Structures are given as structure tokens and as C-alpha cells.
Amino acid sequence: MSEGLDASTTRLLWTDAGLSYYSALSREGDQCLDIVDELEAVSGCSGDVSVIVQGVGSITMMLADNLPDSSADWTKVADHLWAAT
Image: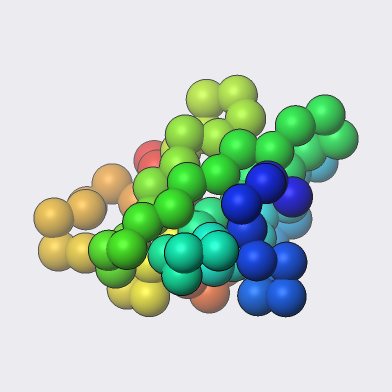
């Protein structure tokens, strides 16, 4: 997991192709998306409704309750998790 996240709030959302996707809260209380593989973790946090993270490789993921109206090019892959298409 990435530093700066509150480990007690971490929830696994999805795993695929050797990557694990977690939601968590930062120590400041912001919503975060953490993408983890065997070698590294990439995360992004935001106080807004959605969090977008450019993950390991070229994948872009979004953590959101619902797909924002302005975001047409996303595919839902798990509850609260969207992949750019």
C-alpha cells in the first residue's frame, strides 16, 4: 500500500492481470484509489467525488460512486471502479 493511507480503511475493489485495486482514506480523510502490483503502488487522492489515477503501465482508473455525466469513455469493472476505454 502507498504511504499516507489509513490502513484501517483499505478495501479491495478488484484484481486483474496481476494488479490489485483498493479504495482507502488518506490520513487527511480524502478518498483514495491505490493500484498495486508486485513491485510498486500508485495512488491518487481527492476530496472530490471521483478520483482518477494513471496506473501501472498505461491503464487509467477512476474511483467513483457513479459515472459522472461528463465521463463517457469509461467501463465499470467493479463496484465504484471504472476503467478508461
